[in-house]
Image 1 (cartoon, rainbow, N blue to C red):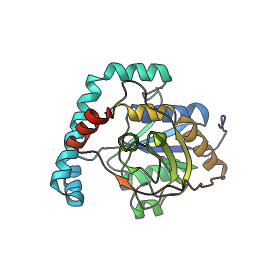
Image 2 (cartoon, rainbow, N blue to C red; image 1 turned 90 degrees about the vertical axis):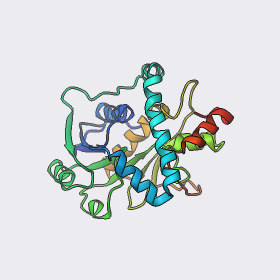
Image 3 (cartoon, one colour; image 1 turned 135 degrees about the vertical axis):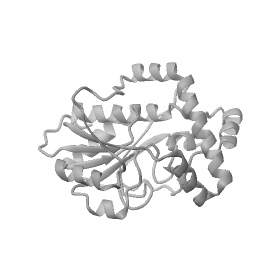
Image 4 (tube, one colour; image 1 turned 60 degrees about the vertical axis):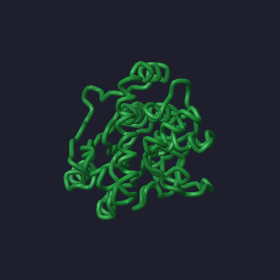
Length: 260
């Protein structure tokens, strides 16, 4: 585990935000150095639905949207569980006073690249943001890493923790930090860690649980990037991209497998 690293090169995190992401940002600030956060606006639900429908068909897209809505409602209904998880794991899940936050419409927009050019970071960490285009990646002035809430490449894409559990593969309930290329979580793997869900965890809280046991690998990977010593590892795993489960599949895994 890396200790506090002194670096003259700043750290940039590009994200849509969320409590689990702020837990990682604050861990980096405490143990590596100051972090500038570029906060992009989330994709509209309409645009997301149309994109999914083009790739997977309307039936799957509508089913996935149903799970997304249910998950959002679940976060509200299970807020007390999330609060206990945050307290038990000592997660700092809010922006701190004085935190540098730069608002941009999109991680692929000119505003994002202009902000990064001004900051001149030693490393850019993506954490819950849009897939970067080839053009955006080509203009990045430093190594670009991604924090992925799943074990890559076996659980690329969305809800990696949920899919590991739903597939009967609880040993791969974990996370990955990897280099970013033009694919979906296909870049060279730098760090991985595994943990386990606890009683009361659901698809609405897996991201928080994963963030709790992933702070170390994020600190280590960012520290390695700043020190110029990034090395990839071979997980020797099959590769598959996953999406949100459809509402009917999610209800089935909950009722049949107790994987919510």
